[in-house]
Image (cartoon, rainbow, N blue to C red):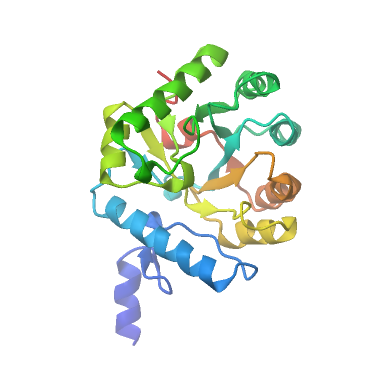
Length: 262
């Protein structure tokens, strides 16, 4: 048994109970999730990360380099929303943190133009999260291209910058989707730590999940849409607890060393 443990330790960072190499893991769990959702999440994570580990998907990131110390990237999906996105921006401004927002193109109208520009002007990344938020694995190549380009054009019209980083809605990808995204010149950004704020409506459960599972180099998935009040409520506590543990927060381009805009 002792010899087996030594062998396992020399193989590098392995999560023994899940069987996945930590660099290719997506973490995040809560006892508040029902068993069916938990099973679905674990199956989706395994199916999504296996092709990345095997080198079949390229130009895609789950996390940063954990050996570079206690660095994290906060990312927020499903903006813009003039209510919760503004609240998230207020919190980030108070704690002097820069984050990365994956925004949907279609809602970038009226007041949401203001909050989109605010995020950019305050030093956060404004990035592509599709135009209408479909499952990319369920639509054809032509529509994928339209979804990507329409959103980037709208972001560029508002901010003056054309984003190069993209997060597929629901993390929905397959080989054809990845090939199409790559052909359009985008880098795909997933996440290594799911806050589960989309499933949990309890700020304490969201906070506990993040603090319990966090690792160096994590890309943390959160949301700032109209439905994510608990996420907004959890954010100050998450920031304060992680800072007390010595973590610092970076934009994705700074943590990953890649270009965010063309």
